[in-house]
Image (cartoon, rainbow, N blue to C red; front, side):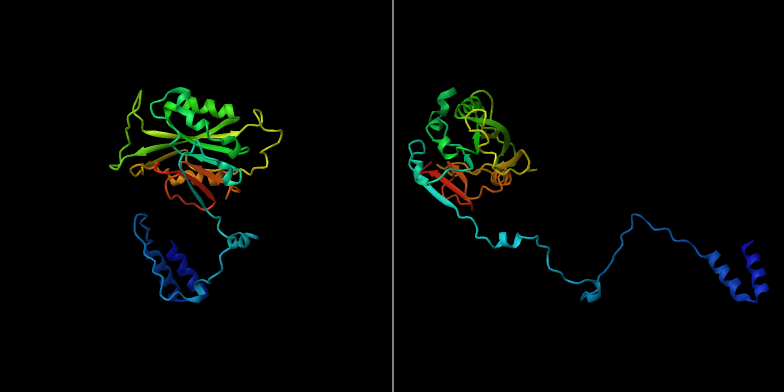
Length: 270
């Protein structure tokens, strides 16, 4: 039908046989269906022509250049013979966030006796307004929460470290009641309802974070030294308190610890 119509139009307008051939070729053409599973290769010629793209400077928000040019916060490292008997006045300041690693526990003690060494550390003077982050074994949770509440700190959140053995299996360490495979980082904040004056501490800038609250990481410990904690611990704290650089304190830090913006206090031969 299309062929006949084309012939009539060509004869009427004098287009000749060329139009008929074009229509016939159009009818005979096969439509190629693309294979959705086929691999298409697009090769960019080298060198890349200037017309394909132009180099631009990366976007820098207003004021970001001044921040980038600011000097890196310094790290302070201190070694003490006895953490519980130390005079922390020599540090000369208070802190916005205090991280307490393992090392404060009294082995074999139960209940309030397990935190007797921790109770001697002047946490209230070191962090009068701010946050306390403390690694706690499950057998000491009740005693630690009781002590921190007594000092005027309220529970906020926690982070769990599932400990991995060298063979990439979950660690099963001995414990009084059941095997232990994790440590919990409890987060406390100085509570206005308990001890703080009205409005005190509300000027601390907090930032919502999307860091995971469960970490899987290996145990890194040298003989006679404090166990190093996962690096994500510091990332989570620094994200939560973006203005806390040089206001962070780590107690029972590993020997030789160093991180910009932190004061590390280690125990000799811990």
